[in-house]
Structure formats: structure tokens, C-alpha cells
Length: 609
Ligand SMILES: *Cc1c(COP(=O)(O)O)cnc(C)c1O
Image (cartoon, rainbow, N blue to C red; front, side, top):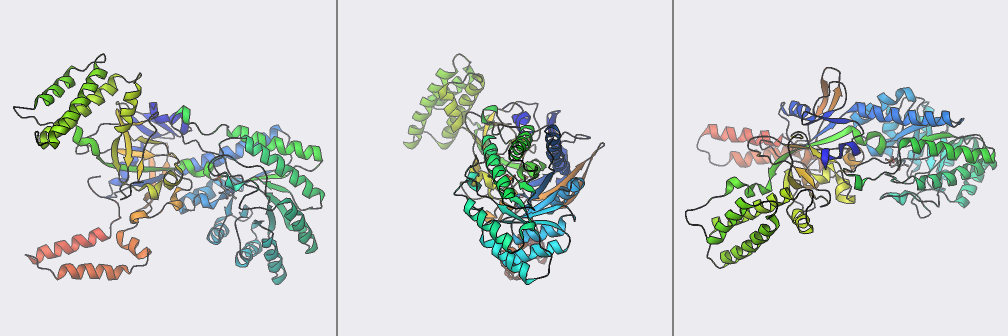
């Protein structure tokens, strides 16, 4: 994995400079200097770094591509977009979305009551709000209130029953009626892990029969003028373009048919989200088979062709891409706490004057190893190790001998791997897989990369520095939860090579990229590890500015959140301690102070790292 695949997943957002990964903007600061800056204030544990300019870049790219496609195809409809809040509702992310999106009239999409309130409060008046997901009468009423406030809001019906609730609210109040959208149920399906959103068995959307029924209901209740949009969403992380084209053809024809049936207010097709993000670190694992240019061209071209054939005006286009907009803006920095294989380092060898003959032979093999002999010597070493284990079980060698044997054999295998790099035998490749060395990272996979746990979604990962030094340890990553699922393993055909570091002497950090979409609110507090520390970074020409540094929740607040009374817990612990015998009053006060300090710190580990 040369350069850790930065040219595949990095999108020119990062560069490697002087052996460190840097932000490719302005002063090009290294992620390491930013991380150390934040840690100098005493903060410990994992950190989410947010780079608002990367949200800006994605919004600009989305609009520029569609504007270009529209001009090139002489398309007469407009391009509009909303950000689906479920992808990231965190305040700093939403703030950047609003700021960078303002000049485009970029809006927000909501899928629940809480998201709807957020959208109504945050969307600039005039920018679109779309509302998807299942709704009750209260939620529908909230949409009417938003319309009354002057918002450009469209309520999307997920089922025919929701139309009844709209009719009920429209009849029962004098509030302004919002625009009405209808999700259509397509027979075409998406591709990728999340494809369940499209297709005849989809969770959402009206069938052809229900669409006809809905049109009649809307006409009968004089609401047909409010019906302005049809909507579909074929699923997230759409890795191939073909299913989108199929869905567009189907939805485009439904649009034209509805226009013919007298849906005079209908003027927009909302194509949902699904634009994929490249998470792969190697060419052979590449996920996405299209570019944004191709995506935009296809949408505009397919709709134009259908409308021209059916002599219908070109509809306005809406997109709800979320992952594409925010994935790249967040980077998770995790300190490495420990290398579990450190016990296998040469410096731990400890020989006596008279070592068992097999150990002496291992020492010799280890010294004499060459590229020509290494396979043979490695076989001899493994053979010796088996014999030495047997000798240990029978009581003939001691624990130090056994430790020496394990280290020597490890050394021999690792040296062979290095010598044969480029042309490893199948056996060596398997050996390597078994020898993935465990790096313990100060974070929770359940909290910070739930899609790895739930869907085996890979996130690009690399060390922050030492990138000009050879990385020779094929690694697997362990998190600090007490759960055996809290491990990230790597495909032996594409191992993650990390550096040999002595953590007593130096710090070592890993960065996970493209974690800005879905991970933060999907993350779970397994073992009570909560949302990491976070910080926003504005990169300038001369340096960078850190703002909105938020520490991860402290331990008392974590307990309070799940229903404990934190003051009671504090009092109880302090009383318990105060009632024990201390040698001096000073010692007692010290201990009580320390206890209190610990309780007000975040729940991640605070060793030197
Ligand atoms: C989740 C969702 C989106 C966002 O999808 P991405 O793949 O993140 O772009 C858009 N629209 C709807 C209706 C959704 O449910």
C-alpha cells in the first residue's frame, strides 16, 4: 500500500510532505502539528478533526457539475439540492453546510421530527426544505407551520395514508399549505449494501395504482396545484451508475405520465442521494465505477430525452446527496496506546551462559539468514519451535527459554518476509496474515466507525508521520472496548503496514479518513465510550485556526445521560473514601481531589497517550 492509497481515496484533499500527512490547502499544515496543538491543552483520547473547507469544496463541485451538464445539454429546468440531515446533524457540520451553501440556495432534508425542527430553524428562508420518512399529523402540522413562516418546504408522501393526514390538516387550519411531493416506488433497484431503498419490495413509496389514487384525491380536495415533486432514492453508496440510469428512465416516464394526467403544479424530480464515496486504499478494491461528471451528465441527458420525446417541459432537478457532501470533512485521529507484539522485539531476548541446543540453533539461523536460505531456515525454525514447546510442556526448559524461542522464531519469519517482499510464497503470505501485529488504539470502533462493525465498511487509515520511513509491520487494529468485535483486520492481499515504534520514546497516531458521513450519530456508546473530542480547523495561507474544541463527555455526565443521578454518585464515592482510614489528613485530601478530577475527565484512556 504505497502512500496508503491517498491517490485513490484522497481526492487531492491531502498531501504527503516531509514524511507527514498534510492538508492540501493554504499553509499546508500537517495533521500531526494540529493534533499536537490540541493535545497541548491537555485533551486526551480520540479527536475528530473537521475541515469546513472540504464541505465547501464538495458543495461547489456538485453545483458546478450540474450547471455544466445543464448548459451543455440545453436543459431548461434548474438544479437544486438539499443536504439530508441524517448523514450528519452535528452543529459544526450543519453550520458549514449552511454557510457554504447559502449562495446556491442549498437547503436541508429532514426525516424525523427532531431533524425537521433543525431544518426549519437552520435553513435560510427561500432555500428548499424537503421532508421524507414516516409522518404523523403533528409532523405534518409542523410542515404547515414552516410554510406559514415563509419556508420553501416540500412534504414527501411515503404512503397513501399520509395524504389523508395532509388533507385533514389542510381542512383543519388556516396555515399555509406546503408543497407536496410523492415518493414513487420503482421496480428498478440500486446496487451496493444499502440498495434496499429502491425496488418493488422497498420500504417507501407509492405504486402505480396508488399514484393514480393519489392524483384523484389531490384533485378532489383542490390540492393538486400543491403537488410539485416526485421523489425516489435508490439507496446509499451507489457503486455503479447503471441502476441510476434505469431508475431515472422509470421515474422520468412516471413524471411525464403524471403531467399528462393533469398534475399541473408538478415541476420537479428529486433523485435522492446515493452518490458514492471512494473508501478504497488499493486499486483492486476500488468501489465506485463513475465520476460526478458522468453522474450529472446521465441525470440531465436521460431526463431531457424522455421529456423531449413526451413533449413535457424539463423538470427542475433536486438531489439529496449526503455522503458525498460530508464524508471527507471529518478525520478521526487515534493515539496508538500499545503494540502487543512488543514482547517479540529483539531487545527482550535474554540468554544465559548455557542455552538449550535448539535455542542456540535458532540463534544461528537468525544470524545466517539470507534471501536464498530464508525459506529453508524458516521451516527449520518452526520445527524447532514445536520441539521446544514440547520440551517446555515436559518441564525440560524454563519460561525464559520459551520466551527466547518465540522471539527468535518471530524474528526469523519477519526477516524472511522482508527479504522475500515482492515475491512472497503462498506460505509466507499466510504466515503474514497470522502475524498481523496488534496496535491498540485509544478509541471505540462501535462509537467512531459503526459501519465497520455493522457492514464491514472499510475506512482509509494511515499513520500521521514517519511516511518517509519503511513501514514493515502488517497490522491489525484493536480498540479499547472489551469486545472481541472491536478489531479491524486487513485483507492479507492488502495489508496495512505500520511502523515499528517504541511508544516509551515517541507518540504514534493513526488517522481514519472519510468518517464524516453517518458515523457520528450511528455510533453507539458501547462500554460507555462516547462521541470523541472534536475540533474544527480553518486552514489559512499563513497557518490554521482551531475553533469549537469540544471535549468528549466527562464520566459523570456519561452516567447522568443514561439516568443516574451524578451528584448522588459523586457524594457516595466521596463518603465511601472519606470514611476509610488514611495515614495523614493530607493523603486523604489528595485522594479525594484525585477522585474528583478523574470523574470530570472523559472516559477514554489517559496513559502518556
Ligand atoms: C439517506 C437518504 C439520502 C442520503 O443518501 P446518501 O447516500 O448519503 O447521499 C437521501 N435521500 C433520502 C430520502 C435518504 O433516505
